[in-house]
Length: 436
Ligand SMILES: Cc1ncc(COP(=O)(O)O)c(C=O)c1O
Image (cartoon, rainbow, N blue to C red; front, side):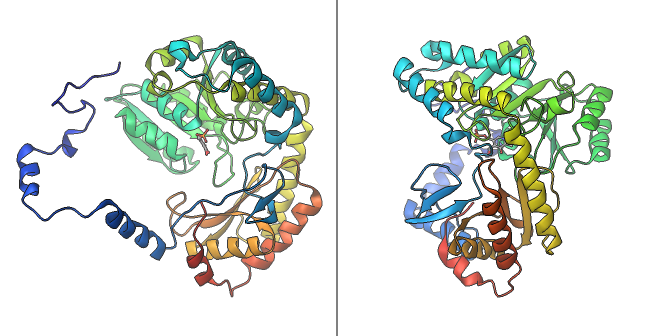
């Protein structure tokens, strides 16, 4: 499982192509000394700055409510994934507080050592019932869930078929698995069919898609994807990071809404978005979960989720099930905002979810528009490459169920104002740093 390299050996998983022969290393020793770390890295950062791609951290000085404090100013927050407002919901916060008092601040060990606690077991039980599956397994983050699952289910000789807009954690999971990976055009069933037909000889075939795409907010045609998988004997994995909590009758996600619970073999979701907590889960058959417990390195070799996060997620699922009106209101208001922006002449490719992309093209324009919005009191993220493809930089507006209609209307007017203003000062953007 944990392949050990002895002193003097290389880690077995390092690709032969990247290994250096001893003589290459000796030759290099004869050359000029390497640049110091800061000097080398400063060059990389300068290059990013020149291309308007430099990122930095912005410090939010208050809780993730519709109004946050940033640089001492109050701004309306429209780039959080706190879609249902549950991160600050009294029941969720109280559950985290009580769990910390009862179970301590940390799980302090990995799940397979002593870190698996009753609070995790209760959460997994709840998730499996919520998703109508046999069993569930909680991971410490969605990134870890995706890399762990994909690399456990596939390996050399197998095939991963991945939507071109899938999240980085899916891409990294595919890389880690060493299976062949073929990308199909975004949401394009014909292209998916083509890939499946052209790779009949592959061993296991795993098709992976998000249900609600994180940067575009559009929905995967899951019914058609699952039919294609059935026809070709492929397994289907759906990442519901942005669908769970918001879609489905009990908020269990788009797969549930479409009645595809039995057609999808691997259900993944996160708890750090609509559920307002932290961590992630995979749910499906008992066999799947038992295999992951034995094989997923990202659960075996990491500390278990803190009890507070597990308890908060459990409380959040109860609120989601009890109050479907939160998600319904959110989606209705998101659709009207998207349509209003489109009507005003902005490029808003879809109005399907709580995530509204406003396409602006080049990175400098996206950053300049976000800067102008911030100056007007609205915190909206500018999304640039490598998160999205070159030429598709955008504002990614995300609504919360706790925004008022007045706040959303004010945002609409401000976006129209700032994004359609051709005098967008791209120099301001280049000078400012800090965005996604
Ligand atoms: C589609 C998708 N999958 C997985 C993740 C990773 O989840 P986490 O933030 O819990 O690591 C994200 C997070 O942004 C996501 O958008």
